[in-house]
Length: 258
Image 1 (cartoon, rainbow, N blue to C red):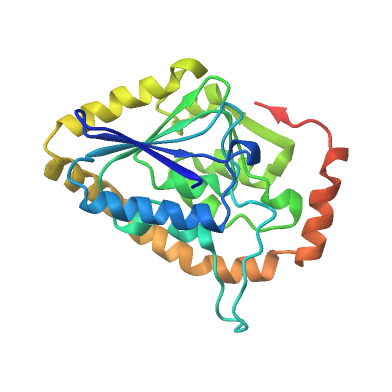
Image 2 (image 1 turned 45 degrees about the horizontal axis):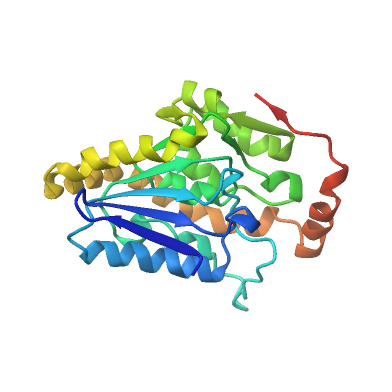
């Protein structure tokens, strides 16, 4: 199992941990399937009324899709399979609140998860960045998710600067991406405090509020997502060229943290 689930029976809170620390909690196909199954299970579990989502260790919350994963694609030029589109709670029709606790790096495909969380807490050592353009890929779904959580100029800068620049936790807090900062050893407890409060309220009212908040941005999200496959197909370098850029990444200068 690459997704660890722990339940606090009395409080009604479940902690979901991406448990691939040696791979910086990158998501392979098994992890993607497990995440979808966990969210669907919570829909029917009346003992779970709020969720904390985090990553194992302190180096990374999640670094997106595992670079070692091969995703078979349909032959049709009008179809594409993206396993990350089904890893979030909203994609699985879960309307119980999810609080993200970001420890270390959050980048690329991590934004599918952060984009479908209600709010984000981060350790003071957390950093946020989007590596797509560096490796010849279009940041489409990730940029769209973050455009709904960050000022336009900030998400444009992060999406375009690739691995050359990382957003520090303090800057993420200042622009509203992160709602609370904590020291690394205190992050999980801070997230649990918020989740326990949410779980203590009548769950019908909480879920209805989550659904209302999501509906406020869902139409724009759907329209933007409709454009994403074509933009990715047009803008992505061939896989072999992407791999070559990724292999040569060690020659790149250290990223600037701002």
